[in-house]
Length: 110
Image 1 (tube, rainbow, N blue to C red):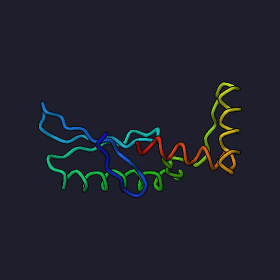
Image 2: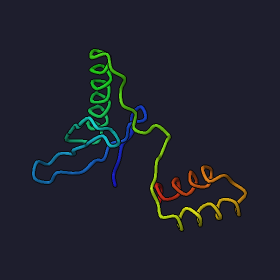
Image 3: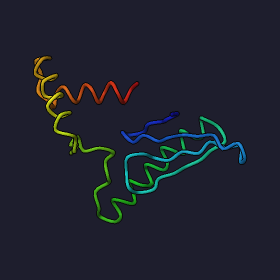
């Protein structure tokens, strides 16, 4: 995935061959934040502008901007997977949270 980041917000970027432009959409928030441009330099500026507009709209509406992630994850997994993960964490000398954080980080950057 091609991506760009601004102020902690990450956008997926694709090239639209039909229109000969780059198109981006911010990930991890419910609001639709999208942008486009003809060059990478313009695209970076458009991402910044889209995020700044989103943040300004939130201030104007008196709402807190949605963050891409809170740091809390609620998962429902099979009991045997939970048990195996707990054992793996204990074997590594870590809490399940520490162990899962490292596993998620490796998986997300693979």
